[in-house]
Length: 87
Image (tube, rainbow, N blue to C red; front, side, top):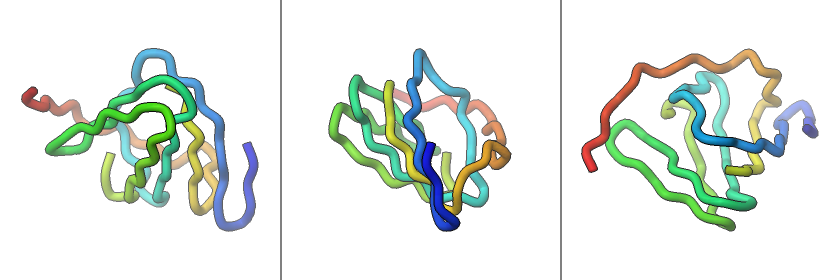
């Protein structure tokens, strides 16, 4: 992890899936370093592959490189209610 007073960056290894969640005070940019990932939004999902980058505004809900602004210190995470997306 690296951080400044404006942002923090994290190398995260995800096995399986994270529970749906929100970050109320942080915008998030995710870069897929290796593997594939599906990010679920309220009304759609996005399949990401190595090299893909997605920007997730703080108002919405594999190995990734994540940059938080302001720096993330592990206390801004709240679980989202489960949603079902028709495929």
